[in-house]
Amino acid sequence: MNRPTMVSTGTDLLADAVAGQGLDVTRVEWRPPADGTAGDLVTVALDPLRRAANARALEAMLGVTATLVDVAPASEVLGLGPGEFLHAGPPITWDRASGPLRGALMGGAVLEGLVADPDDAVALFESGTSVSLEPCHHRGTVGPMAGVVTPGMWMFVLEDPATGRRTHCSLNEGLGKVLRYGAYGPGVLDRLRWMGDVLGPLLRTAVRSVRDAGDPIDVTAILTQMLQMGDEAHNRNRAGTLMLLRDLAPAMVGAGDRPSADVADALRFVGGNDHFFLNLAMPACKLALDAARDIEGSTAVVAMARNGTDFGIQVSGTGDEWFTGPAQTAEGLFLGDYGPADANPDIGDSAITETAGIGGFAMAGAPAIVRLVGGTVPDALATTRRMREITLGANPRWTVPVLEFAGVPTGIDVTKVCRTGILPQINTGMAGRVAGVGQVGAGLVTPPAEIFPAALAALAARARSRSGAGAGPPRS
Image 1 (tube, one colour):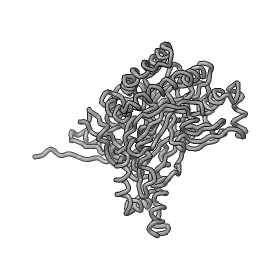
Image 2 (cartoon, one colour):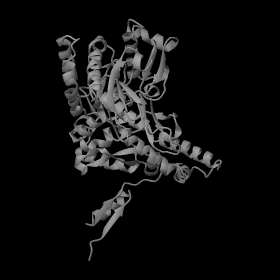
Image 3 (cartoon, one colour):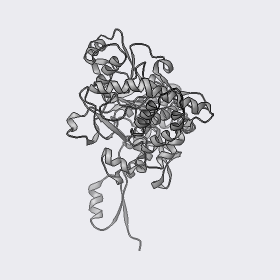
Image 4 (cartoon, helix red, strand yellow):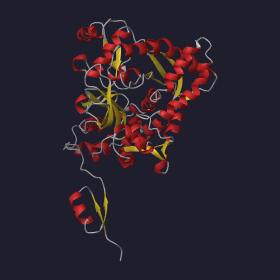
């Protein structure tokens, strides 16, 4: 006689009782759809455009190759003028800005010579007469943590050779007391000035040399390799940074117009900064996701971003509209004597990595990441498996060896998030709540649940409008 088994769909009390009697229990993580989404789920599921639109969106994402083609000031490649600041996340004004975002803006104002003292920048931003704030995403750019970009900052420029589309990201400063975490002390500003005077121009010479030789650096290919080497390309970028240094170092050394001491300092800085490659992984992911934008009927998420106050998503089928909710505070590990009370809510555009299927979605391939963000190795494996339930497919180029080289889960589907109640998993650094503090830890976080039903409602409204169905079925 076959041994009886039981399948449990979330009723742990019953499952535990049966398991206690020696029977085999298969537990299935299942939750009812999010409250109030039933009608919208039906409408979107019946949308005749949805299936083909999502297939097109996924194909577009997977078809992009990101190559590093230039390094140049933001004034040159983004057209930023004096007093124009970019920031991470959805749109926000100074009066709602969090501590780390305010700190980064204050430091940026000093860096641009708008004020002599960071404290003087407060009145500048409060008045808003000679400065402006705009999301990085609105300029084809992504910024880690506070994500502040000023005209004088140097940017990586990535390009898809098949289409010529480009994305950008600033250069990575390292960890701890850095501008992107809201610090703005003299050491922070001195480092940024050195990056503008020495590192940026040296990298430009090297990148252009490699590009003009006909072999530009393939960032997508490096991502493929680093995922085989224990990186997940959000909070662990050690292998990626070393591969980038391998490809650029000969051209940096061969740059004849720079003193050897400058070259040595630059090589030492990049080699000692394990997160340097993050600022290439992010625009590579944005380049892929931007290819899937503006496909009518698609339920694919094309951006997840946080400004330290709000968490926002953008969806392929709803254009540039942001769906926002309150940013959550990560749970994880803290530096020194810092604790949960010191941490600001989640911040940064770096969740673009998870949106593309790496970072928290690829934690199974980077088990060492749990030593930074908390959790266990089984948690990391379970996370990657769980993310398959809310995505459109898998990326055959970016694979996880421990899961039989399965592709990373790719293409977050709004309908699947609402139907299952499973939220995207993000691993992240934590900035101090108070401006000027810097990094206080790292951990795990999810988006606010309510933003996905809001996006679903907008998708359903568009579907009803196209079909001429008016209000359609009730949403609850």
